[in-house]
Image (cartoon, rainbow, N blue to C red; front, side):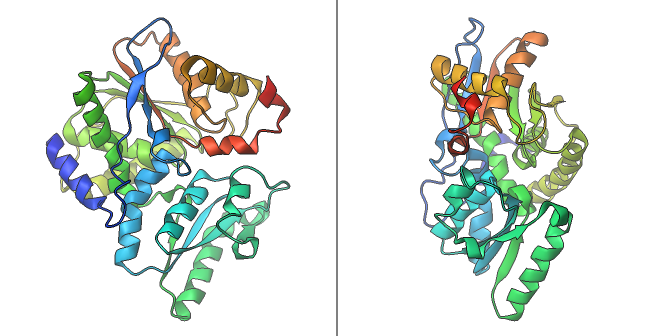
Length: 336
């Protein structure tokens, strides 16, 4: 077990960014007006950046410095056509004069939302569209491209889908450091923490980091992409990354529960319930959420809090991704 201040120092050093003071990786918390209670809070990681979702910004905060240190000139980024990670990477890589080459599932039948915004950063001719029938072969195709570029003298690497990589660990662990800061400043200790998971890197790092400092909070993870089994597999990898990074052997993990979304379980799917939740959250709590990630987190957390009769202080981590709403403005369900 390590001390909280030691965890902070290690994470802060690894996330150091020589040019961007914006990467302080701190977001505020405030109360939600749910069920007439005053002990349910939201962490506003959606406010870390206008265009880059909070969890992606945290991961890139430790990935980008390494790429710059190694003199990387080009990065292949893999993901879906409307991936938050790809759009986020386009911004952080371009800011640091690193070329992004996307390998994306598609092309989509309509260009809107994140893929439309991506066109501001990358010409369509620079995107490698991989049809669904070949998607299982995407990693091999990307690696073949990388080898060709290396043969031309280009320093290039691949950022896997969702940036699930050891380089992203320090930035991912920063969320635990920041929650500890929130608690100290607000004079509160959270008994339950809800977080969503795509590839799961940040949620898995939160569990591993909590184990490293012996934190006893109960964690609730809403698995939005893949399966609970895949989350567990990724968690095993992150435990290994964390032990190597912190130089400790982790003991038992804190108590945690995995959930599939309360509705629209398939990744990327939406329905009237989701859009009604987006409207409810906006009107009652003044928060913008997106239909793929955060709205499903809020909806599932509300159900779990009621069904499990969860007491004590509860925190929901709002990871961001609000720009994804632009892809749904013409959807008939948006007006429900």
